[in-house]
Length: 443
Image 1 (cartoon, rainbow, N blue to C red):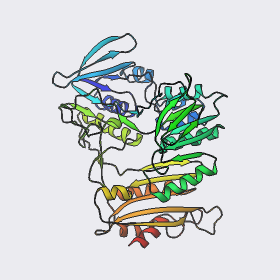
Image 2 (cartoon, rainbow, N blue to C red):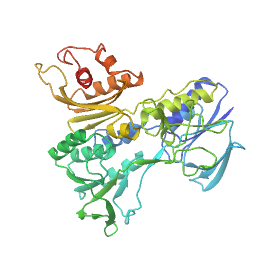
Image 3 (tube, rainbow, N blue to C red):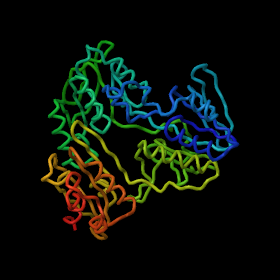
Image 4 (cartoon, one colour):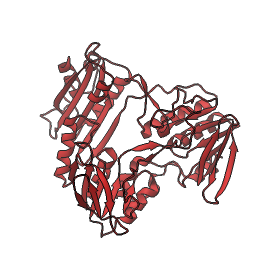
């Protein structure tokens, strides 16, 4: 059977490996428009900051491994531009030779990922303006960040912008963040944002909120950023305002998509068209708490969805049971995490909910090193179902987020959380975990 996979990163290669393992007659061709296979996108800020010595360290398996060890026809510089789902033909261009190509398939997976949003800002083509999504992007930033680059302006105050900001400060750069919302981390609760902003100021970041970038200026190289309220001198710009699915080449009259371009898939990663699958950052993910398809592109989802797509393409029957919207970030000495719904999401769903802010500690207060831990917890006012949790602190955030994510996945109530048998010893916890303390108070 001929399998064609469009995209050579997390979802695509997870699928390819499952096909190889489950179909010993498989003929697998993967089409990657770049030159690098299977890399850790989440590690890019740390390569920029010098914590990862080489960009090669971010590559899980290189192209030669897929070709020589697993027999996958792993092609590079092959950009797909069209898909004929009736004739089962993929069409595109070999970017290295400039020649078109066509491939027939029995089953096809679209795993094209997503690209950084690059707003149509005047002057965006000036030298010194970057985005960050690929290893070449990161290498370009590192190469461009010479001794003359003293000040860097980051457009966007979300996770990527904040992680990059931290790593640039570690490199000795003067960093400014411009965010059009009224606070950093606008997808989090305002109390969490306040902690992020306090940490940013503590490490000398210049924070500009509530301003919209209108243009860049400079003589070949960017030297100024103009917003609707003023001018800011800079030596480099990194735009980090989000990503968009790489699906603009797909006929939306044939393949069903959400408004923002994510391909709609069922729990088996099938699209609405026979033998056509999609997974990863270009596809939807079912949200267990929202009880509907959503778009929250993360590496964890991409790997899971790709694996499941590959199993099912090779004749299996394994569903993707959904996600709960879990994310976490290191920002200097803080850890920030979220899982489930925030207040805005609950409002959008028109839920009646209770919300509680609780200030606890990472572990027993009498044991050395105990740090404050701020938690915001949400529950359904009528049913008591646990809806979401956000946390920020120096220690212990990851543990609480993972416990909460597990509870959300299993649709637990606030009473269930209070009764959880969570580990306790003074160096690790109090006799009541902060999540349980918050659960008891929200009832």
